[in-house]
Amino acid sequence: MNDPNPNLAGTKKLLLDMVAEANDLKRTAGGSITDAVAGWLAPQYLLAAREKMTATEGTGRFEVLRTFVQDWATLRHGDHSAARLQLDREKLDVLRKKAEKVDQAGEVLKSKYTIEEQNAILRKIMA
Image 1 (cartoon, rainbow, N blue to C red):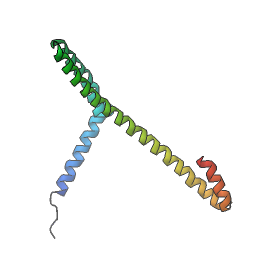
Image 2: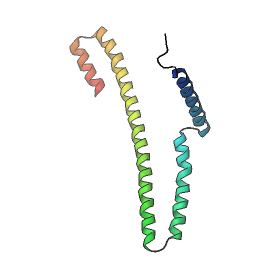
Image 3: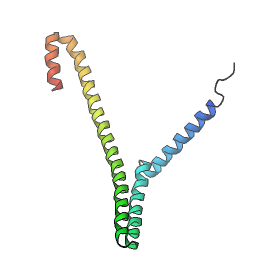
Image 4: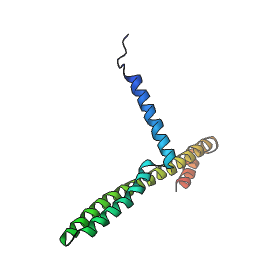
């Protein structure tokens, strides 16, 4: 029988190698590679923008400043999106833990209490 995708094994190996390399880079960077590069890039950009502002006269300075503000706003938007994502992850973790408590409580409730008593107890837990 012919393999429907003879390149699948090679693709899997390539993917595994890429993941291993990325993990190695993360360990070297001490965390997110993107955060490490951003930490280096932001001050470089700031220095270059300052040089351009210093070398520009008159109304051209406004255009340099406007471009800088647009670029910086885009960068900050990325920071805010990352922070929002982290908050969402933390919220999900809290909700999972709460759900686990409810599941555990439900097992205890089923064995000891009537349905009315179970509902009253669950309302207290969820409050």
